[in-house]
Structure formats: structure tokens, C-alpha cells
Amino acid sequence: MVAQLIENSRRSNAVADSSPRKKRGMVLPFEPYSITFDEIVYSVDMPQEMKDQAVMEDGLVLLKGVSGAFRPGVLTALMGVSGAGKTILMDILAGRKTRRLP
Image 1 (cartoon, rainbow, N blue to C red):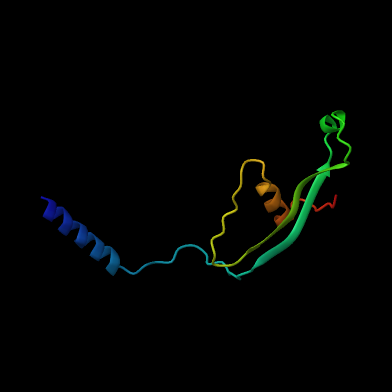
Image 2 (image 1 turned 90 degrees about the vertical axis):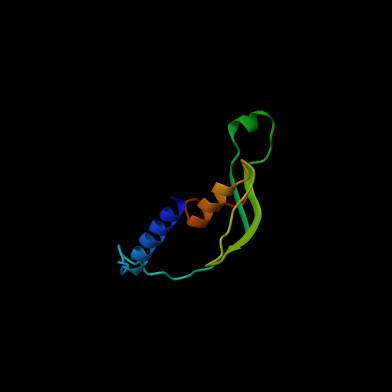
């Protein structure tokens, strides 16, 4: 019984491999880019709650001195604890947030 299942599997794989593969969908042009960034600083206005607690600064620095690189063909993981600024960094690199110096 097991030998018969293995033989049937081999036959179905041989049939699938011998059939010409059809390309489906549109092939989009791909141009590899490298992205590097150096000493990114990002801050926001100090929240009123913190001002009420006698915090004297005008701005709250969320990212300070962040540098890195993304290269084509290399899988890169952006890792950090909750609240570390991963999404803010990606938003800045994508142009969704503007950079403001403290």
C-alpha cells in the first residue's frame, strides 16, 4: 500500500514537471537600490502632560543618532522592544514623517 502511494506520487510529480510552465501575471521592472541613513534625529513637541510634571524641554526626542543601511538582495530585520521607534524610523525613511531637529 505504501509503495503504491509512493509510486503514484512519483508519477504525478513527473507529469507536473513535464508540462510547460505558464507565466501568469505581469512582470514588473526591478531596479535594485541601496538605502543608507546616518545620524537621524526626530523629535515631537513636548506633550502637555509632561510639561505639567515640570519637564522643561520644548521637544521630546524619539530618535537620536540612528544610522544604518539596507542593501538589495539582503534580508534585513529591524528589531527592537516595543516603543523603540521602529515604525517611526520606517515612516521617516518612507517620507511619511518630516525630520525635525531638537
